Structures are given as structure tokens and as C-alpha cells.
Image: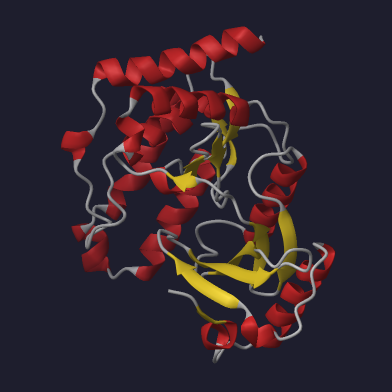
Length: 283
């Protein structure tokens, strides 16, 4: 259900700034917003770390509705990723023709191009045809030349999260959650998984179904939400994608994972073969 923009922003510290940015975006798109309170706003579901909204206004030329997406950054998420890096990634993605275009920025969020496509469901990821399309887009993503050092960021990020988790826990909780053992486990994984050749590429690192969109007419795949994106072993990005298949983020307990839904060997090999085939095609 659409609501007036002023109701969405009521109580916000920088609502005037957001309104000014929306007016500027409209002007850049050739429109004029005479009354900012006439903007129609619809909250969108599925975002984990931000609030996202569809914002509409009538176009100047033919009166049809113009759509943009407004993203309000979540609070307290700085420990998980660097917002400055995320904005740089988003802008670079836009220049590469990947994902939505950046239309405007304000202190606590940004305005993005509205992607007219379907957000995938958990069931869609098990469709062999859709899975192959996602694999193709993953390979394209991994081959992007992005800012930053081209080396694995996974291990330092894990250690940072582990250190912060320990700082928030009592000694009892540290023991109950097994946090005192994680340092040893991380070091073991680094040693085991760093042996031999590793292909490093720019990885999404959060490829759950809600971050994948598909144009239902062209079947084109778009990956969105790059908060966790960085250089990493591409095998990690693929393995994490498989792990995301056991999640249902639209349930009452989105943190509870059902590993009976983890893809079987045949399904994993099919997805891996698609990526390998695409890699050979472009090499």
C-alpha cells in the first residue's frame, strides 16, 4: 500500500535533505515535483541491513508514474562492512553497467534506479535453467575489475567479526557460543584452504535469493546489494551461494538454517560446470 512521503519520513533527522535530493533526481530525469507530499511511497520487503522503499511520482511528459528506489542505511551495521567502501563499489558497479544506477545520495542513504524485474525466491534457485543464468552472471561478476587490492578479504573480515563478537559477550557467553575456539578454527581453515592455486575474483559474498533479480521477459539476471562484496576466492562465493540455499529469509525465524535443503552433489556440480564452461568461453 502506498503512503505519503511525509509519513514515511516523519521523525527522521534529515527528511528535508531527502526531499531535496528526490526533487533534484526528478529534475535530472526531466520531471518536476510541484508538491513533495504528493510522492507515493511503498515499503519493500526482504532487505536485511537497510530499509528500502519504492517512490513514485507522475512524469512531466505523459503523466505515467516514475519509479525510483530509496535506500535508508541501517544503524549499527558498520561492524559488518565499511559503508565508504560499499558506496565506492556501488558507484563502480554502476559505471560497469552492473546493477541499478546511482541517482542521488544523502547523509543516511541514497536514491537508486528502480529495477523492473522479479526478485528470485528460494524455490527459483533450484530451477536448473535459472541456476545456469545465475552462474553465468556470477562469472561475469567475478571478472570485473574493481577498486581494491586483489587478494582474499575473507580471513581478515572473519577475524574482525570474531573479535567484535567476543567484546560484546560475557565470559559465560564466550564459552557457551564456543567463541574461544574460533581463532584456532579460522587459522586451520586458512592453512587448509590457502594451499595450491586459488582463483581470486570480485565476489558478491552474499548471493542469497533476495539479492538476485530476473527480468521475466528477457531472463536477464541482475545482482544487487553489494555491502559485503570484495575480492575473494571465487570458490568461496560459490560455496556461500550454496549455503544461502538453506535459508528462508521470509520466515518468522530467518536466522534458522535448514541444511536438509543444501544442494546435492549433482546440483552443485551442474552450477560449477556452468561457471567453468563460461570461464573457458571467455579465456
